[in-house]
Picture 1 (cartoon, rainbow, N blue to C red):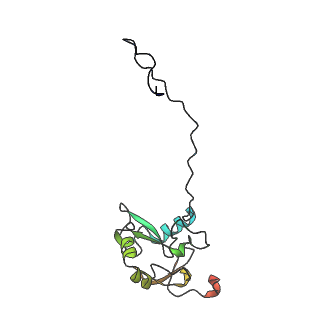
Picture 2: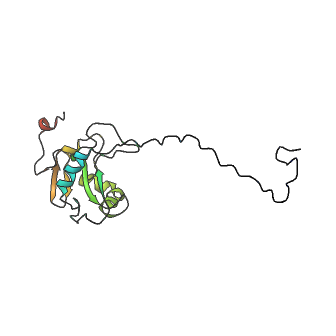
Picture 3: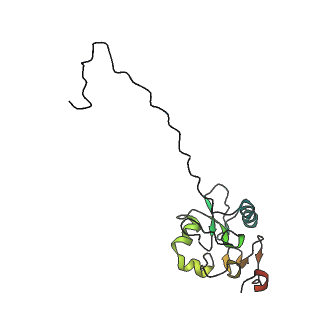
Length: 157
């Protein structure tokens, strides 16, 4: 006799009894590590862009937009200092596949030439970026600079 077979037949009118499942302690859901910019840096970038895409100057209100890392964080983010500073971030329209953000991701060679992307070995503060307002440098205080910062100001070698 298999363990699932009944030993005695069911009587008429006697249905199967359902027992409620026992509740077990729920496992805590692991929170994702926040690898993005701090709220202060997000505010700096939002104030700097004035609610407009920094590449094409379209209004960001009511449309998808992104804080784009010029020096990409790569998978899982980076803990390296400066990766989430205002000089490394652009407020641009679209997602990774639409708008200016899609254009940056689809045309990486052009994006590196325009300064929308920065190589890992480069300091974003020292790489000019082509924006709607023209060629400019970005600093960590949320300012557009028309001349390159001196290396003594940035602490670069």
